[in-house]
Length: 258
Image (cartoon, rainbow, N blue to C red; front, side, top):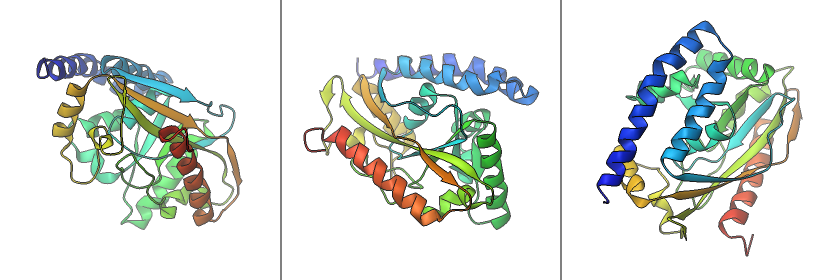
């Protein structure tokens, strides 16, 4: 049964995903509004298929340009966040070349950034602001990489470049992700890497083990809006949002002490 479960789930994932890829490509090509909504519906189905059960606290701001600042734990973060709201993500340029994952990222209108090239960073910042000004949600994984899920890595202030542009007026909302249970049982500190995907873990091997494990519970805490106007101090923004995510993550992982 341990072998059959991941095979069935992966087959179901392909059966759901492959037919929708050309549909999303066409919607993107035509600039149809549904291109923003379809990934949200798709990821809700993915989470249902994979038995990912989401508990959400808080609401996203809908009437202001809003950048979502999140911690990053696993490849599961993508379907979890995208199932909650129609979002696009900011990712490093290398992701665009990954088989299947890169294609799916492009179809979801991911904004890729090459931090080695200044011109690319400026272009990326302008893309982010353009999306925000259209009241689209953009997710920034501010740690710059994924963690083991037990704590939050320091936020990289360099990733907040779009907020340092002149005439930027943006609402920030933090998102704290905590994977709390597998098969209904609480996940301890030592077991959390079963869900967390970080370091030099192979993605296929990690996904296979995770799919064998059973239903997964994830707690998503959306922070209160933080208004940011004009050209700001990126270090100040990074520190402010990092502290809020750390506080909320601690409360979710250790409710009796948080």
